[in-house]
Image (cartoon, rainbow, N blue to C red):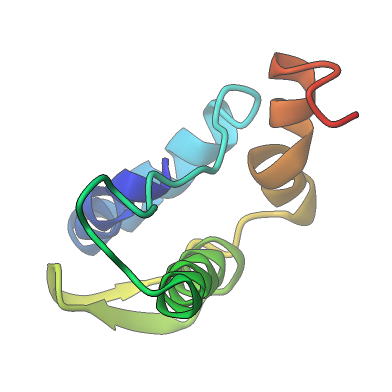
Length: 106
C-alpha cells in the first residue's frame, strides 16, 4: 500500500469520507508495505536509504493515524489525515501480515 499512498492522499483531497470508509470496510484486507530499496545499480548509501524509508514511514503513519492537515509534493492541495481507529491501524501495519504470512516472523 505505501508505494501508492500519494494516490490515496489525492483521493482524500477529493472525498475524504470515501477514503476513510474504504479503510474501515477493507481493514482486514490491507497490509502496509513499501517497495523502497537499494535497486540494482542505484548505489545508494545504506544510511541515506534508512533515513528515506523512515521519513516515508513516518509520513504515512501520520496520514493514517492523525486528523492533521497535511501536504505532499505529489498531491495538489491540503488533505486531512484519516485518524483511523487503533484496531484498524494495528491490522494494517501488523495483524493482517501475520494472518497472510503465518510463520514468517519466526
